[in-house]
Image (spheres, rainbow over the protein chains, first blue to last red):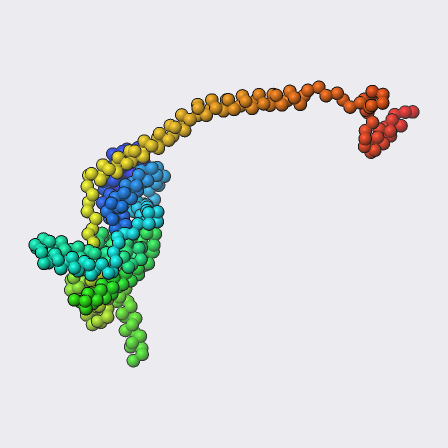
Length: 195
Length: 168
């Protein structure tokens, strides 16, 4: 954090190298935040690039009262929502009915398959099922859940970047997890009945 | 009986809140391990209360499902840094070019303004010349003298009064 402060001060003084170092230090986490919201790597990369350009252009006005990372992630979150609003991008198109198709694909992989192919098939089915479950959640809850459980952000960090109270984040996370598990169980039951 | 139930409900609410805090601060997915990290009172409650234990297990299950299906963002590496810095350089160049363009526009704008001002001056001069053209003062049609009598009765009375005062 202290290193960030020094780098920000240098970048504010016009040091390109200092800004590059800030990019290097924060691009991964910023990409994780954007990926958690947008769910598409390409979209996330575009947005993060835009975020750093924005940060560079407004760095002179940043007074360092908040941590640089908090400021950066907040801008990232806002840019992501703007991006979704403008482009009306759906994170990924998954239908609940797709699982049947996926099951068929999985079966064919099993029939033909090498061990690697089988693994890839299972991974794909699991991934699509989880994405399908995430689709049913509110976009903010979904983002929180991914940021917390997959990307490892703390509740405090999520609260700061989303401009929410820590307790609100905890409650929303709790509800989102529950909803996800219940839906997952429901789908599993449905699939086992179909088999 | 009623009080006991109420008390149990209160205990469960407190335990659920503490379990969520525990899970928010702990990143694993194994229920037994999670129970091991809980403090004595919470552990005892979780072991005794099937509802609260199920709540904990649901959270861990959600975590596990998510981690199986969603890959964490990989480090984008140096190529992405270069891409960002190229975009930053382009934006900085564009910004400085925009500032320079503002000043570059001044001479062009100035020459246009000079032409516009010259034309406006010409028009103004022509208009002034036309309006200042000789127009004779109004004269009475009968004797060719200048009409000194005002049309307004109030003014003519004032003139008469002042003439009367001035005469001895």
